[in-house]
Length: 63
Image (cartoon, rainbow, N blue to C red; front, side, top):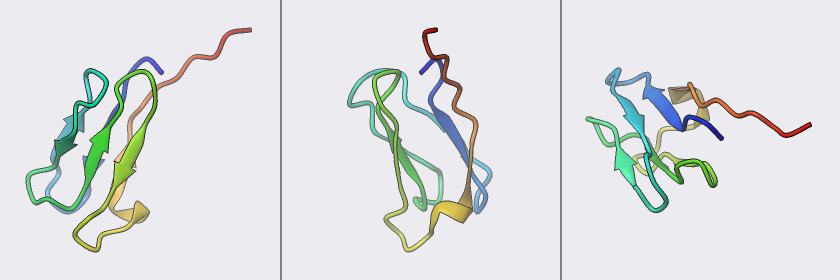
């Protein structure tokens, strides 16, 4: 993973996890992200769901 970030559709916050265990929450608290380049974990603790964010993450796989 090269970039690990998402945009919350509820508050338009763009959040990015920049290193392992860098837990980030959007401005309204609907979406969280974690993981940096090692893994991606997005959650929606406030009752939102996977349709409430846009994933801007970018990955490149080895050939």
